[in-house]
Amino acid sequence: MYSLRFRLISLFIFVVTATLAIFGFYQYARLSDELEKNFTAHQKEVIARLETSLPSTLWNMDESTAEKIIKAEIQNVDISEIEIRSAELPDASFVHVTKAGNNNQTATVIRDSNNFRVTAKLFAEITKRDASKGNNTSQALGEVIVTFSHDYIDKKLRDNLTLTLVQIFILDIILIIALTMSLKVVFDPIKLLQSALFELSSHDAETVTELPESKSQEFGKVIRGFNLVLRNLKNIIVLQRQAEESAHAAAKETEEAYISLKAAQKSLLQAEKLASLGSLVAGIAHEINTPVGVIVTSASVLSEATNEINKNMAEGNIRKSDMMSFLTTATESTRLIMSNAARAAHLIQSFKQVAVDQTSEQRREFELIEFLNDVTTSLNPTLRKANTGIDITGQANIHMDSYPGLLAQVITNLTMNAVTHAFSVGMGGKIHIDVSLSEPFVNIDFRDNGHGIPEEFLDKIFEPFFTTKRGQGGTGLGLNIVFNIITKQLCGTITVQNHPDKGAWFRICIPRITEQLRK
Image (cartoon, rainbow, N blue to C red):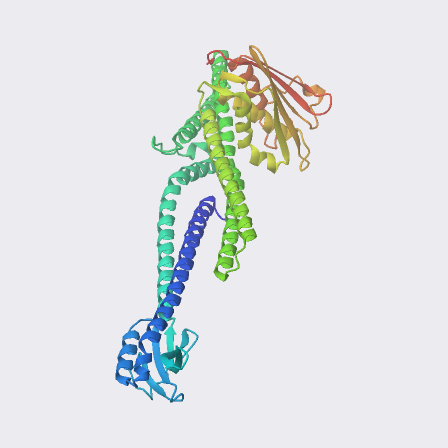
């Protein structure tokens, strides 16, 4: 599978090359048509001049003058041979001149498909008078045979085609260099962050070094967020060790260990954010694949249609229906390219905003359904892998003044909890999020159509470290973090029950305008 960087560069190179090729072949066709028209017009001019100037030389049998006339004409680059034949001696040349010389009898000319022979009759006007009236008659004196060469036109066309190909090649090289350098600015920070995440997941956190921060980088906030989480994670390790060492201490030390545990719990919240950030980074390349694929396909269809219309035009078989079909294809392909490019830009903007939200506790205003769509978009790769769909409904234009990073953590944890616990392996399911406004509160209903929660566990699922997947990757902290964010930081409530139809049903109620974040 080729990398996204390679596919983007290939797409731009293909589009630019195809565009330049279309214009180049169009110019080639116009030049060819113009040269052919000039070639035909020149033939007529030469024949007209010879029909005017040569009859008198044949009448007077003035071979010297005739030879001077045709030597002057044969200086043209597209004339290779001129021969004059007298009517009195039809089997012999009166004057015969070629590019190689002017030997009247022995010159040999090799003709091929690039030579065009034009024969014109030469006449003299003779005046006759009778008893009734006078009249003029024409007498055939002979003929002139002019051989025109197409080599000059072919050379000009070859030179034009060579110049076009060289221009396309040079522009492609420049574009490859420019795109490689431009995309390096975007993909190097992503690659650096991806490598750090893999290293963090496969090694001890204490051995992982922080990433270099740069304010000039587009992903500077994401990298700073990673470094913050890494530092907190290392603090967790230190705090855990301190808790283990103080486990055998006195009662006073037990209270200090409890304080350390609370600090560790806060750090684990940051660790959960790191997991969400990892999903976001993986989702960037995955989600942009679809619109880029549509752009490549549309560009290919447009290229094929353009080649076909060029072919018909070159063959002279162009019809109005062909042109209308080409315009329809070009319009639709352009629409698809523009709409999918806009979609890719929107996805990138959404990913950037979600990344900023998840790595900060910044308060801002946002539209709820639009925000939920951005968050769930970053989870699409995980949802598709689990064969799970998600849809969002409810009242539009609910504008909140709150902490989107915390709310994103809630939605992410609830979604991951449903994917892990609600559905059978390989079967998949459906998640539904519904929002409504009841001033001054916002209600969010999060439910799935999975197995539901056993009644004996309903009162325990928000407790820390409670999980039914222990030993299978479950930590028991996901829903506890959700409960703490909703109740302590967003000043709301969350309840859970089994839906009457099927699956678990979480009901969240939070203020539309949240109070200052509680530390």
